[in-house]
Image 1 (spheres, rainbow, N blue to C red):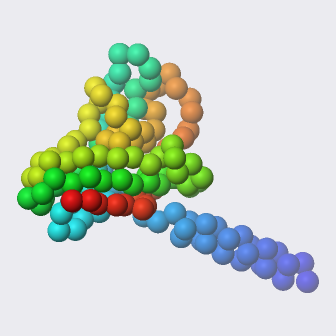
Image 2 (image 1 turned 180 degrees about the horizontal axis):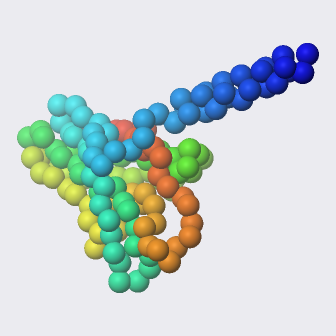
Length: 147
């Protein structure tokens, strides 16, 4: 009986862990495509930023490319998971962004101008910082494209 309970407990633990991991989706790579259609492409690249003030950090630099011959206006809600927990899901106002793109242009974030529409914090890489928060998944929800 003890062995049956022990085996049951181990199996339930493994199944519980597997279910939690499956809900996170794939891990974030060095680069990736978040969205693409006939008018827009949204991608990211990882980069390390070394600000003059504050902690060194890894970020995702977002690139929005308007591949159409018309100006477009975008709005979206960023979905950001840190350590497997969605930190932006309950805050649509704070994590909803807008961006205007002229026809056939590209807008890309950078480390110097930390525009939250174009740069997403991933993790601290500074040896002086002991926190463990790390971006584990990213998504775009409620994307609206107006031409």
